[in-house]
Length: 89
Length: 377
Image: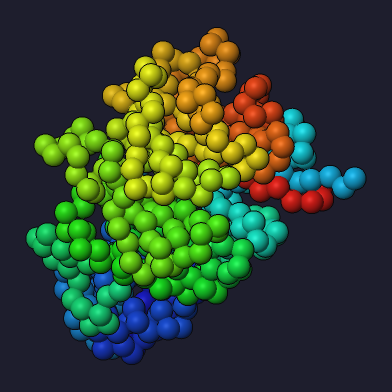
């Protein structure tokens, strides 16, 4: 199963920072997370399916293309990080 | 005699605040922030249910969110926000597509409006991109009002500086089925059948920022307010001046020209002072008060004139207002409330005869709404 690490900003919506998943793609993974943690719905991606501007997904340490992320396939040993960029002064 | 609790609900650049006092409206106890750090465009108490308050909370990280409180804004519960109708398997929009014809997600929640008393669970929400939604279960679910959201003129609507936002919703409880919406910069619209069909209602409001000066739609309305006694009289603060209609928006008359500037964002018409409306005009260029002085003007339908309400040297300063930044309460004499972009909250407890500054420095104030209820805070 793939391991999934969520950043601390998501603590309000997901009580655990470390999860595992057998979802076949990143799109399926987010659907799975939203199903299990309904308050997450709309927070990582909007209703058109686009990731929110400050959300970035990483697969094994590599940033995932924002345009095609839902189709990115996940393997058993993959590690996914869901991160928010914190910026501004 | 039982007292009355007066609560001022503030949406600010950094969260929600509540100022509580009594009917004297002299001393205020401030609590908050709630939704700390978030951009709260509007906090709206529901006069049909004492204690119920809605907040439109916008965040660049989390997107727009709606919250509801049942205890005068002490505890908040996130409720489902409206969503743009998108097919389940629709691919994400390409950045190359024309944003006017592409379904875009809701960017910000701009205005929350309780429905009429005869529909105690109905609530309306206006958002950017300009769309109107209705809930009949106190905000737990939402339906788009496509008679407006898919209006035949929509492709020609253009955004104002704040985006293409539906920021004004008026429900005329005295005329069944009649409601109004204001969109920047599409103008004002009226429905006479509970939001099924809509008609642009802007005749008499000239447009300074496009070649056609008298278009049927495309005006940059900033805020509208219903008169308390005459259901056909509505006051309008537009990008292009202060206007009044006496026939439910069939015709508008610009009345603000005698002022040195009648550009501005706010308007309120007190429930206990029919024929009266308050405006706080700004410089059209800098968008701060003229001559560096805080000023609120009272418009009288009886005299057809404006009068200043703040002594000329009372408060100097360079600040503006956001479009939801002024409100009035339902007491007699009415309280008038104005929040500034620099976080000052001005209050008059006597129909703008005297003004006081609440001794609290808020973040930049987006919205001001007031509730009055029996009891104490």
